[in-house]
Image (cartoon, rainbow, N blue to C red; front, side, top):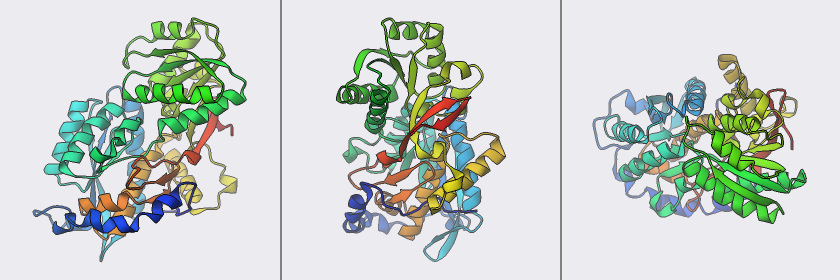
Length: 409
C-alpha cells in the first residue's frame, strides 16, 4: 500500500511556478534558521524531537460537522500510513502526531485553539477550518505567530491579499476555476436561463462574484441571485424567490449540509429543472435519504478524486488515490469526495519537512510555497505568488445517478 500520495507529474501551470522556486528559498528561510530545528527556541522534549506535530482544528460538531468529521477520518488514515515507516527529515525518521481540536463550528473558538496549539503545544503547523469563517479566524493567528496554516475551506479571500497571507495556504479549487467549468457545462447542456442560490458568508460571496463573471462568457443569462440564510434557518422563502421566473437551471453554491437542504426546498417549491453544485456540496450529507430524490440527476464540479476508474490506474498518484479510497471505505463504509483534502494537507506538510530537512516553521513555509505535486484530491502548484494550489485541470464534472456521484466528463 502506498504511503506517499504525491506524484511529481507536471500539469499546465506547474512547471512555470516550480522554475522560480529555487532562488526564493534561501531568502525565505534565512531568518527562521536561527531557531531550533523544531521551530521553537527551547523546551522541546525528546519525544517531540522525533515527531512532526500538526495542530488540527476542525468542525467536529455544530453546523460544519458534515465536512469536519470527514477530514478527521482522512487525516487519521494518512497518518497511520505515514507512520508505518516514518518520514525522513534530515538525519532523523520522524512520525506524525496530530493534536486534534473541535472548534464546534465557532470562529472564536477556532482562533482560541489556534493560539493555544501554536504557543502552548508548539505545533509545527496548523490544518483545518472547513468553513471559510473558521479558516479566516485561524488565519489571523497563524499569520501573527508565523506558523504555516493549511486551510480546507473554500473562498478565494483565504489566501488574498498574499502580502498578508505569507504563512497561509488553501487546498480547495478557486471559485473562478469552478465557475468557468460550470459555465461551460451549462452551455453544453443548452441551458440559457439560470438562477444562483448562494450560501450565506464568504464562500457564497466568492461564488457570486465568480458566477457573475463566468456565465456571460458562456452565453448564459443569470436571471436572479438569491442569498441563503445562515445554516439551520429555513431555506423555503429563498428557494421560492429563486424560482419565481421560468428557468432552465439553478446553481446552488454552498457546502453541506446547506447544499442538500437547498435542493430539497427548490423541489418543494415546484422546481423540476436542472441543478448545478459547486465542489462544496460533495459530502455524504448531500446524498442522504432526506435529500436523495431532490438531488438525483444534479451536476457538480469537483476535483478528480470523486470517481476514479480503478481499471486504468497506472501512475503513483492514481494508485495512492485508489488505496486511500479503499481504506476509507473499509473503515467508514462509504467514500466522500471532500475527505481527501485533509489527507493531502498532511502529505504536503510531510513532503515539505522532508525537502526542508527540518520541521522549523519558517522552513516549512518556504518549502510549502514551492511544492508541485499530484495529491489524492487533485494536482497542486503552490508558488510564492500563489498560495491557492488546486489546479484547474484537476476539475471534472459529476452527476448524481442512483444516489452516487458518477463521472460525466
